[in-house]
Length: 387
Image 1 (cartoon, rainbow, N blue to C red):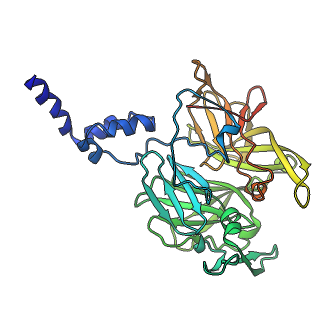
Image 2 (image 1 turned 90 degrees about the vertical axis):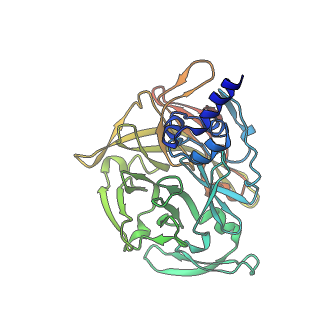
Image 3 (image 1 turned 180 degrees about the vertical axis):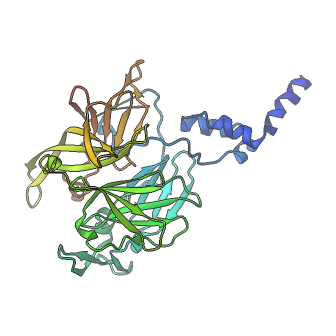
């Protein structure tokens, strides 16, 4: 009996580097939390937010009970921090990125409850002033005209919270080397910040308001961004001023098919190729309170791979054994998911509804969630299979 107890106690003194290596083989957040909770010593030695557990966390709008969610392992997290006055605008490396009604932007790890504050909404470059005491006119915001001129207007905090910042992506979990960027404003400009910054920095490039970015990602230490016309840009965040270079120019072949596309995404696949994902919609009008609202459903997707030699996009018909996940999350290509019956759902695109303009009035929006089967060109709406 005594010998067994002494032998068991020795596990407490496992070297930190060995414990860390063991933890890196646990891909499930639940397994990792249980592993670190084995004893106080392990809990103190192991990182609370490991970078190797990247998700994905597919951010669903509104109530998940609306959807047919088939899970291999059922588990639910109670998150009192995520109340009705908090909106999600990102998911990266297992962290959720939220905007509170008071303008606080926060990264939250839902499994460890760790949190980190990014610069507040009031420091987005288009925000001139913030007066929380002025009810329904808390923000002074400047808007761009297409000719480059600007004008100021007063907006309430709800409108700014819901519409001003479209998406946030980080380069890693919170650490000294972390960078973050946000797509913001009516012309989808790009702002960025470093770990510890107190405000967002704009890419003050002439004509930037005409680019109209649709998505952006970190890749190999750079920020790549995709615009409305499927042009690809790389942003330099190593200087205080910043810089921008066009990598892929406008393509005549893509101009015709991108006219009716509402969403575009950038994804890095497992071979480190850049992919462009185009999302097509069926749209029709429904009766609104004051005027007709546009209702939408995803019809199909198309995927293109960057030809680095020719600097152009080339259509591909297969993702092989992998899947793509797009929405408010940082767009990613990952291993397939199980349907709980021993089948692995490959070569598909998982998508959630992130059309914030349509969701603003809460009349339509939040419903466009599902899976697109790339080989069969079939869209399964309101259905998800996750693990």
